[in-house]
Amino acid sequence: MTEPDWLDDHERAAWVRLAAILELLPGVLDSQLRRESGLTHFDYYALAMLSESPERTLRMTALAAQTHATLPRLSHVVKRLEDRGLVTRFPCPEDARATNVRLSEEGWRTVRAAAPGHVATVRHHVVDVLTPEQVDQLTAIGSALLARLDPEGAMAEVYRRYDP
Amino acid sequence: MTEPDWLDDHERAAWVRLAAILELLPGVLDSQLRRESGLTHFDYYALAMLSESPERTLRMTALAAQTHATLPRLSHVVKRLEDRGLVTRFPCPEDARATNVRLSEEGWRTVRAAAPGHVATVRHHVVDVLTPEQVDQLTAIGSALLARLDPEGAMAEVYRRYDP
Image (cartoon, rainbow over all chains, first blue to last red; front, side, top):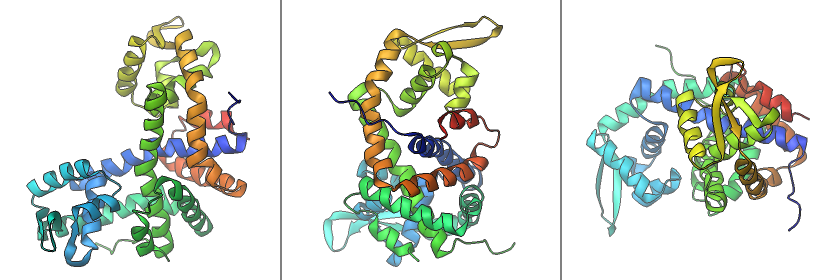
């Protein structure tokens, strides 16, 4: 056994901060959305992905990829959103084995009403505390990490959609 | 009502990447530690904080602050770690109303044995994909976000401990 390649002080300073953000930021995003819109951050993200898709419809497998969720986890969430009338599920016309999910009118109103408060939270805790240079640095750092975290590029289509 | 201050393309490119990292990285850290050491990332982090404290002991309130956890959540985790013989709890000698938690010998061996695999995961997914300049950029970006996310500076003592 060789000695582990411990982090140096610079690396550790970066890592403890990223670990703290992983611990704190999801709770902040979730609690604002729950309080003001009755949605988790994951619910919001799934509804937003549907709202930006042609005919506000995606195959379940595509929505799973875009939200980084397993199909069982996504099915559970979609069932709950369907019970609230925010989405509907139906067999894919082009492939009878596949299921599509579509945003309802009520879902569209819900995600539109939730967006301003969510964006304000993202601004307050992330975007507005960074300089324009740091915003672009974060994009490059994020791309480097995601090349390892998402090696099959399931999210690549989503990133491209938002790239400047 | 004024129009929300939507993210521009640069800001959105950074945000979708950070949101994807929040979704993917915790699962990667958790599954490596669970598989190789039977610990969650939170368990590991709490044991590591104790291992670096004087006499490997902290008040529960101090450990809660250093791990960004609420006291009820931390109590639940510490009870589980105590049942496994990794920590012990006892009344604080200086303040009878407070509880201390101490890493046991078995806890010390467990966290030492878990560290190399965890560090290798952090290197593979984060540190080794960044240039030295990006590592320092991530520290500055992280500090800016945490000034909002951790305004009372509960973690500040931990960051200082690791700063270059």
